[in-house]
Length: 58
Image (cartoon, rainbow, N blue to C red; front, side, top):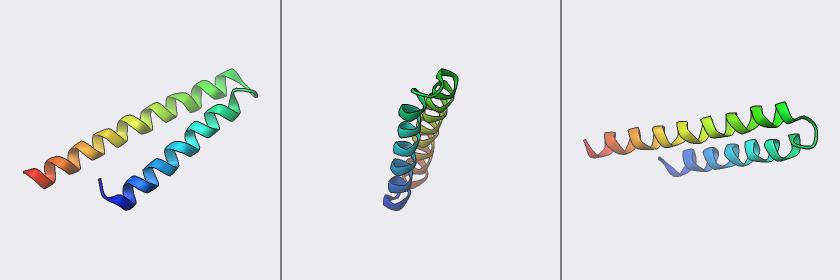
């Protein structure tokens, strides 16, 4: 993953994690939704990173 892409990815992950933490005090369902979105986004980031690494090597 390139450095600018990794920076944007990290910032967006932190925003999602912060939204999860803040939403805990408002609604459990909203917190669960943000938690799932955070996990999906993290997994997608690993997939993108692996694909970019394979393209560079192969």
